[in-house]
Image (cartoon, rainbow, N blue to C red; front, top):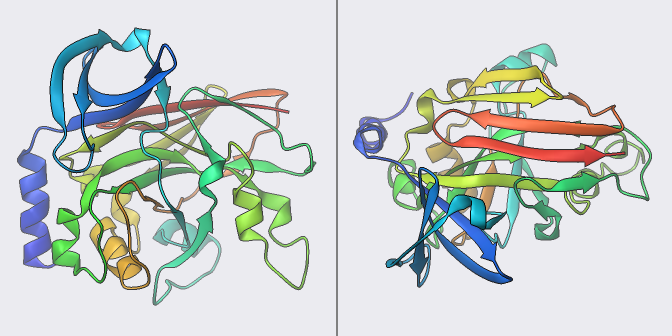
Length: 274
């Protein structure tokens, strides 16, 4: 159960008005800013440390979205939802179980991801909530974790599922999840949002395949950030993928469209072609 300090912080976040941050490219030049309706307010400086609006706005339709941060590391959780653990007859872990995805696997919102030429097996989608770190931190408490979280985003933790156990001597989690394009997230980072009431939905080719609440997480966002920060220093822009729940499946069609939808954040849409 969350401590009173964590509950107070969540209440504070709930009262804030969320802002939606993006990175973009326009005429070959990169930038970042906030989205308000159909307009982008351009900022300058450091997104995570006192950036300022330039006073310039451009239509959202005139820019190309990039992955909303450039993380130094991508941390992905395993067995972090009670419902999936129960289905797989697994007990809740004592500590968060996680792996690392290569930063080179990032894909922008809207990008079409090709099947890796070196792999012919099943490729699965995993719709997830993502936590974006906003300040360098190490060994933070759960009560202080809200101060180092920049915001929340949508993640599709794409996985070459047949690779994980292909070699009986070594589970290939990192390889299975780090092919080029296997790390799309976005389209925005929502700042000032209470994640506790959020629901993650994944739609494959027009059919809903996942629909599960953040509230079912074994390790909730503040606890996750605290625990992981006791293992390694987290840096601004780092991405923690909170794990997935029931409904993970294979992208079987020659051309697939996957939407990860979190009301209050947005919809991450990507294609996957065989």
